[in-house]
Length: 122
Length: 110
Image (cartoon, rainbow over all chains, first blue to last red):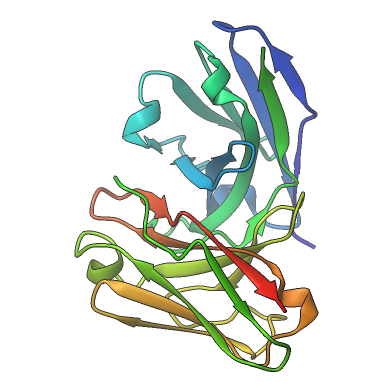
């Protein structure tokens, strides 16, 4: 079945960077967008951006532009999200989620989610 | 992009219907039929319940339905059950080719 399995929890110092991985299986990795969404403790969901693994095109939320980099490795069907210049406000659970097929528009929904990766900045 | 407006909480008795609203603008909810709804139980990842305004993924109970009128989308749970107690988030595609979520609604089964 379709699965997205993320890397483990991280603890980082302010100013550092974190890179979270999202290993996919059960579908053609290069055929779907991958999105990243975060959730601060006790707060709602916040969309960060997407990557098209077929070619590596990205689109980031304005809030994260200049600080986030989304990449993918098609050989191991894995997407990555790196966030730089961390502050305590970046403490959150980070999720990857499968989006729509990339033969069309990015518009749609997120049908399969990873289990989440807790990033603590302290 | 401002978050979509949802009521903070909605409650109902078992068997009763409830409706959660999700209000945006003509640049998101009102402009596209790409509103989706997610259920999240504590400590768990979100689960897609409704996509493209009113479509249910395979395996989601038909007690869940979605609709949209103007800049407001709605999720209705008919016949509320104990396992429906969770947080619910709406999401919409936007004119900037990005996405925005709602603030979230806590559903309580009385």
